[in-house]
Amino acid sequence: MLNVQDILETISMIQEENLDIRTVTMGISLLDCIGSDIKTACQKVYDKITFRAQNLVKSCEEIEKQYGIPIINKRISVTPIAIVSAACGQNPVPFAQTLEKAANACGVNFIGGYSALVQKGFSAGDEALIRSIPEALAVTDHVCSSVNIGSTKTGINLDACGMMGQIVRETAERTADRDCIGCAKLVVFCNAPEDNPFMAGAFHGVGEPDCIINVGVSGPGVVRAALAKAPDANITEVADMIKKTAFKITRMGMLVGTRASEMLGVPFGIVDLSLAPTPAVGDSVAHILEEIGLESCGAHGTTAALALLNDAVKKGGVMASSQVGGLSGAFIPVTEDAGMIDAARCGALSIEKLEAMTAVCSVGLDMIVVPGDTPAETISAIIADEAAIGMVNFKTTAVRLIPAIGKGLGEELSFGGLLGGGPVMKVNSYSPSKFIARGGQIPAPLQSLKN
Image (cartoon, rainbow, N blue to C red):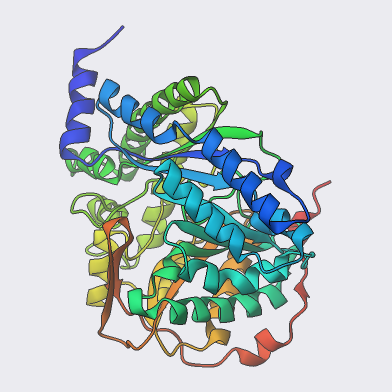
């Protein structure tokens, strides 16, 4: 039975508290496009994407009108291109250009999957794709790239960590005239999920169906508003309020995902429960933590508050949907979160504190601007540190750093839109170069022996 109060509450969430569907992402398998001739393979890739996703944007716009629910991004994810391009034995950049062309034809915001999975070593196409990432991201606007360098089952590929530090720097240099935007479209994973709808890390896993719809919800502003109505609640009551709010948000995601699946004639995959912030005022995960009782995000107690938030979001979301996946929890991207930006500017939030927070949240060190002269080895070591947290704790962790070429502490980068902008943050100046130069494989932890 419809409850008038519930309807009015949802309307208020959308109009006043920045509630939206952050993304509807169509995953498309390109395994049937593999071939030895690169021109033929690229044409197959373009034809399949544009056929499958030709009505994606139109259908999402119809859902927006029908239900009055904003859908901010319409996106596509594809099979990791390192797999698709391996048979060609050539520079895979033409595949990136094909993805860009397909994204423009379909009208989507981003297309993800210029990716490689190298957690245990490099196969035929992996190294070629990784080395092509700077060029691919420099010549495209909508293509996103990811590389998985570790997992709980396999350990961490330290050679890949070393390579990715260099790739991140080169990508920043290749796009320095655009505020190093290429690095905002590049993420390095440990335990990467195959059904993630969020960019830059989305790719369509080989275990997924031929085509599928995945949904990513938002709602930090809604959670903060709910907590603001009970300033004297104890911490148990706070957790319960977050859980109930996450339930409502996820039900909206289920509605949109189910409807999009029906309209497009493809299976509905998952709802990713992650609270995805934006630079807009009132749409911040950091502000939720401050509403819980911190003077500023980054203060002592931040990790505990974030752990509570992440757990409550998952519990509420799981009750609302049996089709939960992706990352699911709370994102802490610095440049994309107004509260995080403020905390970083005033010095309350450091990279070291962010690293501690990543042990209990959804992803990792996300959208962090570092000095332009940060050595590649330091970036590699930051990636290795974050991967170790994910490996040991059976969770997804990731790094998306932006070396601000030509800028130092006290200066800022600005991307605009959902990517936001933020201050250059300090990194530890002591060198990890000898550690990274050792290369090899960090063995999988004892926790991996579960069979």
